[in-house]
Length: 505
Image 1 (spheres, rainbow, N blue to C red):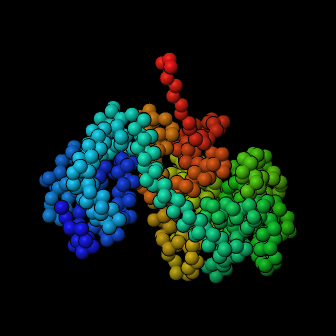
Image 2: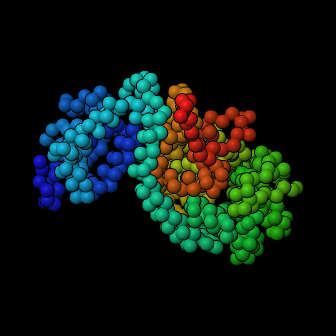
Image 3: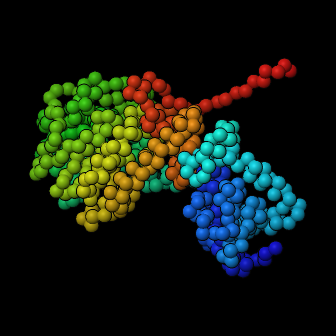
């Protein structure tokens, strides 16, 4: 048995932890290990042929059955002995490892671990990795859904405290950003670009809970996405602070209410300045659909679009230049983006809503979104402006605005979002080939071992509940498989399953 003091912990050798990165329980346990291992003495490695090959003492089949640990001297520990060894890396769990190394606790630990190992494939269900590591045929043949839900639930119990902590942190960030931007106008690029923040009591609830900012983008004399009916008071206050003649035209990237409700209203207030929008957006807004109640209450129902308005084709005229108009379906079918080739600036609207946009509404078509992201990758973009206020750039002429300006190259952001969507597509196609129900496929797309799954879990489920399923992870999955005629399918909120025995009492 190893020493018991803090001095021993300082001298503990680094260990490599080989775990099944497709198993929900393994993923959650490794996340706790990383949290407790403050000094970084454990390096966690997913089990794959290429990661196991350099270690003669490791066999792929045995590694897939149970946890393996290799210390700096090359000694291999497996199963419960490996768990006990890892527990001794932290003063918080050292006592578990000490007791678990001595009878009778070591016997009990070994029995429990062997039970899990014996049902390895059934427990893992090969979720979270699309069965790439090893023996996908065996996994699909031997795995059942009951162990999948059991495994997922145990992973949920391990992750839930971390998810709640992430929710509290995000709420604090959202509140801080809302306080900094409330009622503000932020001028960038020598006044050519302005972020005009629009607030209302109900819209601020959305900002606090989910981090979306509501604003009008003013670029070279064009007011883009001038907000919703709930934001008109804030828009009036902002207009009163602008010099006369600042806004020469009004435009929209798509038909959603927070972007399009004030098109005619703003044009009239400014003396009948022209309104520009895409042909499909105009068609939708001339007879706008009744949106769900939660959206009507928070943001407002779009009014019917009135003449006059102008249909955008290739270019959008501005005060000193013109913006290229690029079709960008995905977030919704009518979405367009505006690109200033000289400035290398993209006004993306909602075609880019962060990398991990995981709870969309039913308008989303993720397969079209993937194609759009590929097209955007072909553009030379140095400044990316989102439709909900965030700016992504490395340019020095864009000042730092904490929480609002992200110092990362837009191409890297788009590439990461594209990889995420393509990984989701692969997961969903794999699950459907296995014949999994939609909810099981959803589980495979949000494995606890990936940070976006547990960090956004509480926020995503809150969105699901508040919207009665309208904004949900389920809709994200459906956005990859929904047929064009599949408009009447309601979102899933939750599932409850009941069993009744056929035997008499």
